[in-house]
Image 1 (spheres, rainbow, N blue to C red):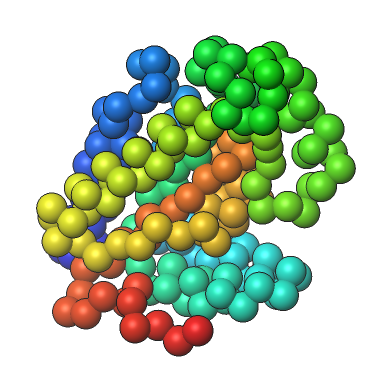
Image 2 (cartoon, helix red, strand yellow):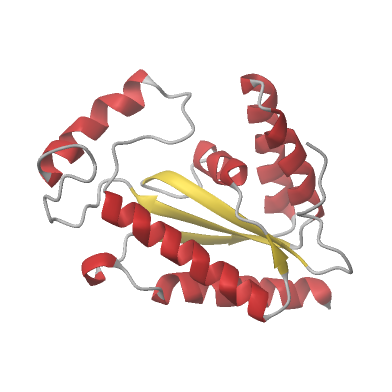
Length: 183
């Protein structure tokens, strides 16, 4: 029963992320709910990346994910921009930013995230993450925003078109598994 309830909360979190405010009203957020076998696959990829890159917290986070009931993945489409030519990405125009994205992926495929990215779209991703975490909290489901699981989801190509992603694993238990963790 708990498993189904948490998966339902994950779907409500996806709804919160989808309806969260977006710059200029343009939605570039990619959402995926994972549970059961996909949680195992995602945690294996986190372990693989942690060992390959020598990043210990990926291994710790993989253990948390294995104990989770579900996980919400949120990414942002890399090719999208707000079209404001605001310069927040470091380029004078949105077109220059999009042109600059292409060689970064080819030069540095081992990087966790790839940019440059539209600063407005990255803010949208943060707002969507906050809205989703709020929904989990309203339903008393423990969660934690994880960089590591987002990186693993990108590595598995689970969020098409995204170069930045985060995850919110979920657990309903007597004590949060996401805090008081070993380093």
